[in-house]
Image (cartoon, rainbow, N blue to C red; front, top):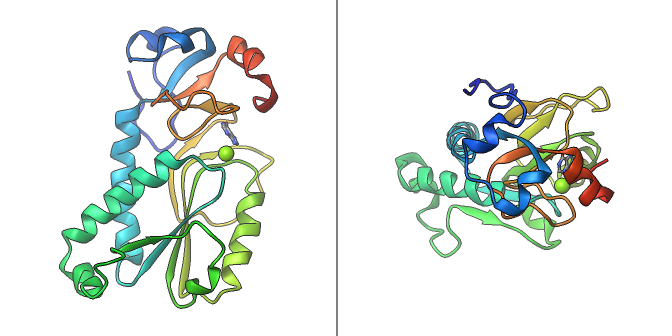
Length: 211
Ligand code: HPA
Ligand code: MG
């Protein structure tokens, strides 16, 4: 049913797979297909967490979420990272004096001066144009971090995107508007746990963002 590859082409034929997974009834008309089922997202995220720890786990990791990105991927990725750090000698030694804050610090505000000397992980849910990320990267670089890496659950294959290195990418997807899991459309679809392709009906209904 599912082509297991980082290039997610989606499962089944259009429409078919909506029967294979639980989707909220109120969205059935709004979806063309289930693109990446929730379980697969979690499995891939667990591996991304392991890759992150392999690259960055020898030092304090500060995870930054790009504002307006969905919280789901960020939370799931960090849960896996934290679980790995609890089970790793090497990492525990680095952090045993830092019980109060835990292994991974999450900043919400603008206190970017604390980034100096740290390993910074920037977490996005989807990279499309890549422009926001480039601006964000240069902002972070100004604060003299030890290392900056970027993780995104999805990256779109689009001629529009301006290239820069993405260190941890979950799935490469075609240039279609997707929703669900971490991705909303005008705040809708947050209660959908699979990444799905929106249907024409869905586009018309929640139009302003789906273009
Ligand atoms: N879906 C939701 N948000 C987005 C997308 C998408 O396909 N691309 C960029 N932001
Ligand atoms: Mg977004």
